[in-house]
Image 1 (cartoon, rainbow, N blue to C red):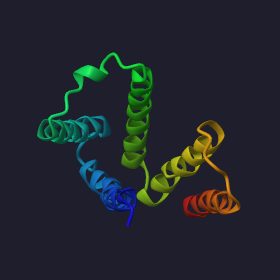
Image 2: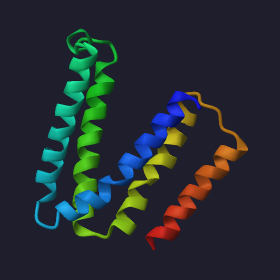
Image 3: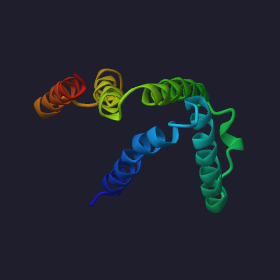
Length: 138
């Protein structure tokens, strides 16, 4: 198996637990506090991985692609705040599929702007993903 496929499966399993765990936590913890604390834990863990691997962030602080990293951070913060608040207010079975549209939209962006190939199978997959999310959310 290609390494990225295995890592994708690990990410899928781990991320599948996020919404249910956060929904339970946010029964008594406000969504903004949950976002802050969960991301603090994430930063500590990732910091540990960087230390373990001996990787310094310093050389990348002035990297030419840093504006993309900053934009990504802003988009991530807005997305997570909105996602967690939506989870706090609504059912997981509706919020998660709508949020999951990012998969189809990211694929379209990759095809449109990153010169990734569009095949009939990919187009059908994107179409079925959107259809599935619509059906799950109504």
